[in-house]
Length: 486
Image (cartoon, rainbow, N blue to C red; front, side, top):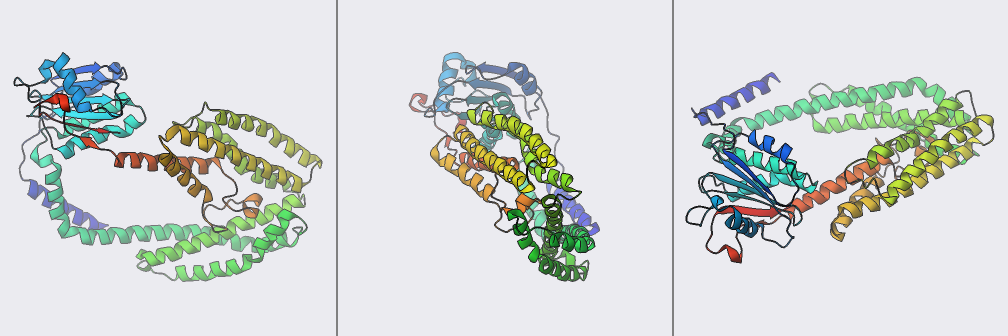
């Protein structure tokens, strides 16, 4: 790390040398702020103080205009029409440009367009106008109109009349020149350092699991020897146990290999994969020996059957507890019929869990029956979550193509890893008997939906088109400005 610090220090010196002495940049608030919220979507009490607190490089008049249009509208044409009709001060004396010192930020929340327009002494490149508009789009997609407007204006303040030494072109050139000298060595050192740190972390994880498995090995074999093979659950767990010693021998061999590695060896990525394989194998065994112990205790109603049963209930309880936070998230359609069905199921299940435990304690039901009930309840929850997934997809997607993207992401996350074990392995009897994708859990739902939203949002952003003209009514007007959809 000392070498890395020296390299980075040299990089800073190179950048300073490239920049040379630069004049101090001005930081001034807007000369004026005018808000024409014809769409009625902005919170002036939040917008005005926030915009007035933004620093520009030169005194600049900020105008905000919103209106409710359609997807086919040309926002540029509408902004020009409005300025000609109600704000002649926004247009230059010759009527051909936007007025000097002016920055207009425009929004159409219905047609889903955002636009930026500047006087000739404040204009920026088309790429920079796109940058300003893009700064607002994620917020606009979430209908955060005020915050999105503030974000766009703030980005505009950074780019309008930006000093040369702060420009993207200069920074890119400076960094490219400097990095050419030191990046190769710095990158190599950083990658090796991170790889070594990750290897040590994985080694510690593997050692903790391997030590636990080794210490409990005689008890694990004793527990397995008394699991009833006549039980459907017991017989499946015993099938997993039959490969336990083979996997343990594999873990032992991996342990010997990774502990023979030097610090230098741990810095190499192929060896990181080896250490991860050791850690994963040991973790799988550590989880399985706990399941073997719980299966024996529960099916034979041993002295520790109660905590073993609680561990079987834990994944289901966690899902039930996570339902309301899930339904309270943005885009979660918490007021829908499928959300109501999930809430009703949660209330019913909370009562049922207490009844099952009581009947199991009294001997009114067998452990096998109790596990069947738990399996059926989790299967029912999976179906309810799938139904709700359709609801939230229909609520967020604008068309069938977007719905297909989201559905694919959710199905991919639900399918999970195909291996019997792995980091997603649920250390329970049901998690051992059934594959990881059998039950649809709330965390899986959240992960799939978040991935789906991100994928669709990226696709929307990637399909954004920029409009630069002012339409048929613009005439010879050629002010600097453009708009795009979000």
